[in-house]
Amino acid sequence: MNKGALALLVRGTTENWSPERWKGRFLQVFADRRVALLPDELIDPATVHYAAVWKPAEGALAALPNLRVIFNLGAGVDALVADATLPKVPIVRVAIDDLTGRMTEYVVLQVLLHHRQQLYLLDRQRAKAWQPKFQWAASAIRIGVMGLGVLGQDAALALNRLGFQVAGWSGSPKDIPGVECYSGEDGLAPFLKRTNILVCLLPLTPQTRHILNRTTFSQLDRTSPLGAPVLINAGRGDLQLEADILACLDDGTLGGASLDVFETEPLPQASALWHHPRVVVTPHNAADTDPVAISIFVARQIARLEAGEALENVVDMGRGY
Ligand code: NDP
Ligand code: OXD
Image (tube, rainbow, N blue to C red):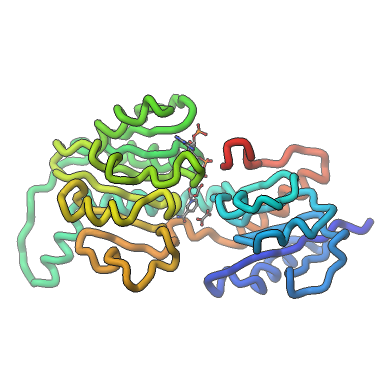
């Protein structure tokens, strides 16, 4: 039987994410399926049943008339669903243990960095100064995780195990052992009011765009041993207003920030975030997932579909995530 082909439409920013490397990985997991890199390789568009994509050019997927599934090679689908010409087929996003574990590592690392005053200690090290400061217990800090999906729940549970007081905020109500759960618009104010370290793992949608702004930051709690609250954002750059973050750091509304995502990526050279003493910048690598694990996940979904089973991690287009 002639198996439907897989088209790869990948805009890679690193060697590991180059289209050629992706093609090699998919050829490993598909013994007898054609894999073509678009737009460079010639293939009859009618033979393409599956597309694996990362930020494809707008309109490119509309040229594939027999597409059955689109596989987004990351977890966030905001860039993909913004394409109004997208074929009306299921979109599957990546939600695998490898990605989730790496994001939880990032969140725990950044929370501990602020909680354990590591920026101060590094500064003192450079000055060869032996100047310990009072260190409070994890139980003195209230962490609030925005987004209690695959990533938010895992991070919240890990932080809870470390002894922090953890709450989360989501669209629909949740019941997670050890995590105080808030939801919906009405839940946002009480969630912020009790939070000292705000961790954002929301998807970017019209409802969440620019949710990380001065009004949000000014509602955070300032009574913990940390003093001014801290922001950690690894969701998407357009969830945040960078001008507000900088102004709030400078007037003391925020005490520090760890940012993995930015309004413009790569972060422009002119951004004051690069050298702000209380900001930690990482290059959108919080959950830099093993691409081999992603290609195995995609192959498993195609096998499921062709065996008449349901696809996993299908995006709800009504919600946009
Ligand atoms: P999920 O879809 O599993 O979870 C999203 C969560 O956000 C859900 O709990 C959802 O609520 C909540 N949410 C969405 N909209 C709202 C809203 N308007 N108000 C309140 N809560 C809302 O996504 P993941 O956890 O897998 O991923 C989250 C995001 O992380 C991705 O969309 C992506 O942007 C980002 N990401 C970043 C990476 C990086 O390297 N920096 C890597 C991977 C992902 P509900 O439960 O009710 O649906
Ligand atoms: C993702 C990402 O969405 O890398 O997977 O941001």
